[in-house]
Length: 411
Image (cartoon, rainbow, N blue to C red; front, side):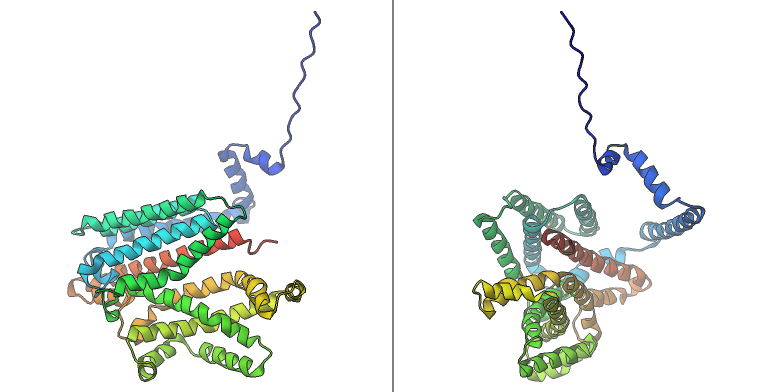
């Protein structure tokens, strides 16, 4: 019997990037460090100097946080910083709103994006910080339980939506429209829960809760006003165009502090009502002027062929704008509008400067005004800065996920 020669299997040649990925991570890290950090004498020296500076900064931060700082100014004023004058017997309303918002975040991520490893790490770190704050000292264990339930709802909403098919179908369309409808109705629902049916009065919204109410109202209201403003400024009818242009230029020409003075003195005679409502109106009007310019720029960036193609298939002017032009313009203007949203979120601290409203930073001033906490102003302001950064970072990450799912910036 003749032995057949063994046939060598054909070797599969992988692309260079796949071939590099097969090597151990330590080897890849060494090559990356040699190529990016130690590629020359000057690069090596710069890397060592930068590492030394970063080490000093990290050491100073760690020493301040764990050794030098007195965080009693935060832990003993938790309710003052979080809710201020909100009735404590209505605390369940606050936690219901928090759980609803967390569930909505999970539904949104599961519908249009996905949670990556960095997102999970950030949620774990932020949750650890929140639980450490809530469970410290004499805080009730129920606060920690409510927060853990909120995080669980976030992951539950995400798990439900991420398992639904993402191919173009009626189910997918229904899913997107349902979540979009919840996003639109989220702010009214939260306000109803907080204020209606025996809830708090508007003037009792203080602390971090006031920041979380003012910013979404300013952003959502600004976007609603900005769309007709952008269309009006781009209109060929000069009366409409000049009116919208005048509005935009006048509002953008004055700082937000000046418009808060308008809310305090002028709007009281014009519309009256609660001061917090007047502050919401000013924030929405101010935000709308900037967002309108972003949308107008996006409209000008679209090629005229889009409108011509819409007219060619029989769409009228309104249908063309509604179905073809405006969705693309809003898609293009997402990055600058998110930047404006983050800016208005940070600017909510200005209401304490002009108006007799006490948001997070204002209540931090009240906390350090207590005699025993007077030397601890740095700790209070560091805490406020970290809280504002966390919310701004969440907004930025959600924006990046949405942009990635929509293909913004890709060629």
